Image (tube, rainbow, N blue to C red; front, side, top):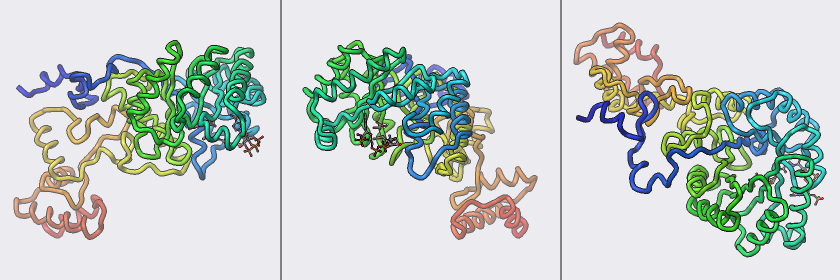
Length: 416
Ligand SMILES: CC(=O)SCCNC(=O)CCNC(=O)[C@H](O)C(C)(C)COP(=O)(O)OP(=O)(O)OC[C@H]1O[C@@H](n2cnc3c(N)ncnc32)[C@H](O)[C@@H]1OP(=O)(O)O
Ligand SMILES: O=C(O)CCC(=O)C(=O)O
């Protein structure tokens, strides 16, 4: 029997929450992810603010920090203290908010950045340095040993101040000299053992499998280090890169709400979280039902509209325009097969989206029309139903958008 009892036995199904592909748990497709836990390091307030054409006010910073805390991310990258007094004040106030999420300051390999982070009151910092040997030599004119000494100096300096210190080498995925990288990272690790190391695909130019390859390579060089992954979405593969990085052993992922971030943005917090939780069985610690309100908050603050078809948080994602989808839902409803995840793989309520509903347009069928007639307490003969359907479809094509209830009622008035 293909009934709900059979479905409930599937690892890929959770009643009232999601119905994903059982393939995800077959063979080695799951890549050992099921049952693992990872941490979300949210970068909305730092890399997110590097999105061109936006700036957070002080009130925005605090409201975003509060929302991220409620969302349940493990860490909030609160900003780069060297940027301005306003950023520093924001970080200070976030520290004073005593959030459950860890508040992290972002520093260059410069002692002044660490001093400023300390003055903001954070307990954790990330210390960054570019890791592309070509750019290090050409732009900064320094050799490998100078990079290593500089990184060790500033990481150790932060540690001496009692700061939990993570090291982040950016533009790492375009480095072609693995001997160089092994030397730099092992020397840094042996000298000062940062809390963790962030591997970075700054220009989003590594294939997903390359992300996994890089993580595995670092696990060979530094088996005792916690690895984190930070990437961007230049080629649209940021989420897939995150998946591979986590499967290969990364324990922390850097993401931002609505995929904000420099240029094409970072992997998006909501997409990575729901992908890992629903498709792979990974615990992210995030309160999934807070996702939608966090996305709306960032949309309002940044004035960067979220598209209707954006994964997870697309506005109106759960509405059905296609007649076949509406029809199958009505047939299931009529026999009490209450599995909402038919025209979407997860329930709208899982992520705090409003319930989906049929909408009227060019692809409506008679089932949609029947739904709207019932909604308005109207009755129609088979012929009238056919005529209303034809008119709704035609109007949807002429207007190139959905029809409102008022427009529907005007059509009904003419036909009935
Ligand atoms: C790929 C990325 O995302 S890169 C990071 C992007 N983020 C930002 O740039 C944050 C916003 N930036 C700013 O507000 C400013 O650039 C500041 C405050 C960081 C620096 O401002 P300025 O002192 O005016 O320097 P400017 O912006 O011209 O140049 C950057 C400076 O940082 C230095 N720098 C860059 N990376 C590092 C590093 N890892 N460690 C130490 N210094 C660094 C550069 O050498 C340069 O200093 P120099 O002129 O003495 O050589
Ligand atoms: O190093 C920096 O300042 C930012 C690096 C970064 O976010 C990236 O490379 O994606």
